[in-house]
Image 1 (tube, rainbow, N blue to C red):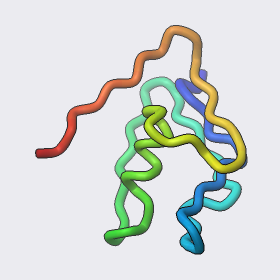
Image 2 (image 1 turned 90 degrees about the vertical axis):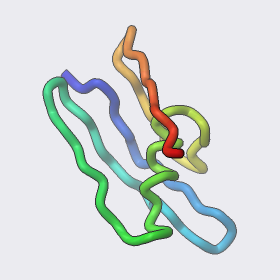
Image 3 (image 1 turned 30 degrees about the vertical axis):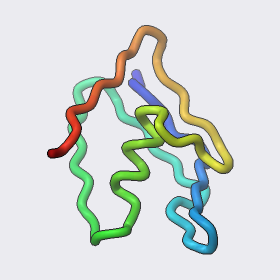
Image 4 (image 1 turned 45 degrees about the vertical axis):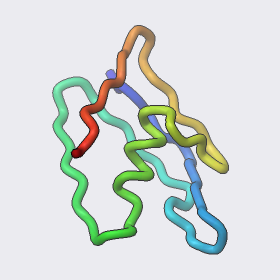
Length: 74
C-alpha cells in the first residue's frame, strides 16, 4: 500500500523546470534517499510532499490518516 503517490507532477520556477511529469510512490516499509547536485530539486520535491509548494501540474495523493512531519535544517 502506497503511503503517498506523485502522479504526473510538474514544477517550474520561471524557465527552470524542476520536475516534468514525474511519477513516484512510497510504499509502506520502503526507505528513500535523495541525492543530487545543488539546485537539482531535492528540497522542492520535499516541499511538494509537505504541502509547502503546489505542483504546476499533476497531483500528490496521500493514504488516509497519514501525517507528514519534517525537521528543518539549521
